Image (spheres, rainbow, N blue to C red):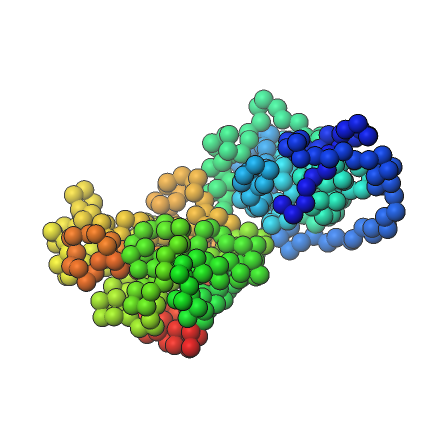
Length: 473
């Protein structure tokens, strides 16, 4: 931290106790400071606030949740800051269900609580928020976690109410009861708020389009900076940094830890260490997504030849993965099961690796439900997941609503097949080892079929080579 908190206790003057537990670092406030700190400030005009664009959509979501739990009191906490080390916290991000139901995004106030109080006709909803610690309160200067001297001004309760279209009350007034259904503690409520997000409304689709567009700009930034990235000893980390700049400039940040996996690292599905070099002749797999201020995130993967051109083997693997992605996209339509997308992609993967002589059985045998799966050695993950305010959205939904569920208009999901031949895998010829490829796009299901929201980001091997030639030069 650039400053050291000042003690509010001591022999010179007494004042409210600060929340900082590191009492050995605190210094006492002199009497002169305490006598004058509340004086000499210009009046701060209250800003007139209009409901944000998301407010009516969030209200409709609350109505749907209310109808699912008649007569029950529901409690949806935003969550609290999480400690990073000692007295520093990670950047606060509200619980996804809280953000979805309130419309609050990156500007949500920590520790807020949304409460549904049952009525004969539904629920009265109140958002309990910590009131401003402005200069009229001792916390203004004494509490480094909430005081506006430290963290800047926050909106007043009335402004929050006008902004979100929700009745607000001071956080001190919230009461929890023994029979409350509390998010994360009650399985039914946790499941319900997750399933509420399976289909997206018009505002959510707009935000996801914006997140995809920002992510595309981030990938352009990476490609344009490839010469410097190659020259950097930890080039993977340079990739991460370039994308982070775009994510923070155009949005709230990354929706998840960026995977910048070059060479053999591309075969590790969740490689986030990002500490290796980016070497010409290798492929680099980049899985990244910008989270916009509403907290909706993209989730895109592209695999690039670092030198600008695929080798014959790299191109064979890459185009097979693209074939699997295109086949899955063609299979996606309203009314089919979510799992059928995966089955379509895996059919391509199994047949191609069998043709290359990598399987001990035929492709048909590998695709048998009970005794097959030999091809899964080279693609162990699923092909799709729902996407939205979480990168793996709706994760608490029931299996019959998710994996075994039916695709409906308004659903947004990924298609992301891959092939991964680890550097020490003796079941594949040496020329395949260390090659990892994934292509991931974000798909919106409409009444007439799927729309690839990320189609403008180059996908084919030829398009990728032309992309690098255009930007990296």
